[in-house]
View 1: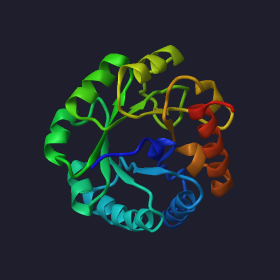
View 2: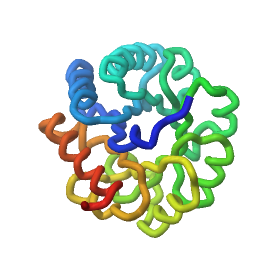
View 3: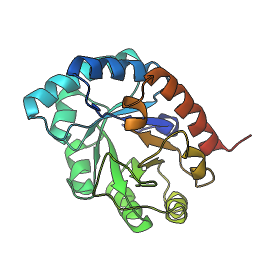
Length: 215
């Protein structure tokens, strides 16, 4: 299974942002029908059974709106529910081991913070890269900052899609224009927004400008 570059345009990473489970699921559905092109389900504090239940429900929504579903960190769960893919960080399961476990059944995404990590991930079989943090972020406190020049270097170094992540919002997306990215990954800018549908529409339009230029 492979991912299209167009699927990277507005890559949403789930964040409950203090909402109840029902409110969270509702916000996910709103995002899926309002311009999100790929969804990563990220849950760091759930046990397997609860994560599985949530993943099955969200997979049904993703199928309804024809949006690829990526599971964060958990290859076993991704395979069990038939998700489109799995995403792993540098401190998680080795990308080569992920590819061996997934075979061709899953899209494999890998986090990269510099060109060296990006090339290593590509060689290990990654289908796309999540690169950041391009701006300061409240979602993760232990991330390494990634400057514009290094992001551009990554995009020039690899042949697979690159999505920028970390602190991205409507006010700073266009600072990434010309870097060569294929899209943006956002969490709180969508799931913490007062109006999820409006946020998705604005973010997608701005992402298109950052990816394709201002014309």
